[in-house]
Length: 293
Ligand code: OGA
Ligand code: MN
Image (cartoon, rainbow, N blue to C red; front, side, top):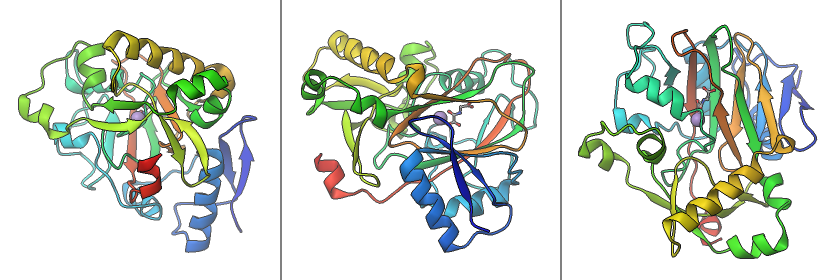
């Protein structure tokens, strides 16, 4: 049986049915999932129930594994499986972390609209997230379609932003927005800032996409306040409900998204209640034409 794809909104995101991804998939199935990703940007597999190894095996079909922000904290994870990020408010021993713990800051930073690893080059391609425990309220994950949002900009704004370059830095959201500055110089230097065009071509679909979010800290040739206001306005435009899909988790769900053409964020929940997710992420080979755009 081949997977089937069922759109979740008029503009992007689809639910995948007729497939059990706990079983190894073949190249043809992987290709059909990749093609659906290029079209929909977000795919939801309800109750996929993957363990750590199965998640990594599934992820490997879509590109080389990427460690992203783990390079800053460099903490061991508790899964004994490399390249699986512990997206939780739980420490190495499985206890919910107290106030002030870096993982609490991380959980809060994830509640800002962002694209995973936009602070590195190449940035992340697909992120794959599974849920293993849920709080009693809140904690949805939301996605926004940056291709549809770009398409709807006025011609004047499209012309204004066409050639702008944005600086992305891994710690920007954490230090500037959350007021957390307990990072050592070594941690700050672990991931130097990178520059990306504000408008990128999503090579897999040929469509243009806004590349913005919480890691953006400056725009070349613009004053900081001008840049921040422009970025804030673009973000507000791009995250209107008509471009957003809200995922309400059920245990075992798996979601995969394309970081090059979507933004996402977690929603608030009680940080004293356990919420555990696991994320695997793929990078991609940079495409020359993309850098030039
Ligand atoms: C992530 C992320 C949001 C959430 O795993 O990259 O941003 O809802 N997660 O936990
Ligand atoms: Mn994220």
